[in-house]
Image (cartoon, rainbow, N blue to C red):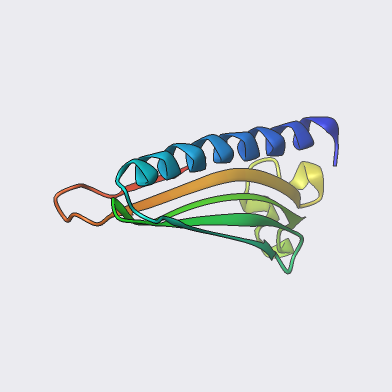
Length: 114
């Protein structure tokens, strides 16, 4: 993995850490015993990621996930994806995903992908 790709993934991991700290801080202030669960996962076609899930009193469940995946598009769709033919169909992607569900139905859920 080249330096720019590594830098992007590290940035997403740092952002994940800040988000986890913020959500966990809110839970700790509500006098609850929040739980945090972490797990790594692998993508069969290449790469993988890390999931962090927080369970608490304010937030029923918050999932913050980072990923870095790579592989090759199916030959049948390479010409349908702009730029894919220049890389012989190879791709690399990194990102962060956040989904939060509150305990109260009066507070809307949040969902973000970058």
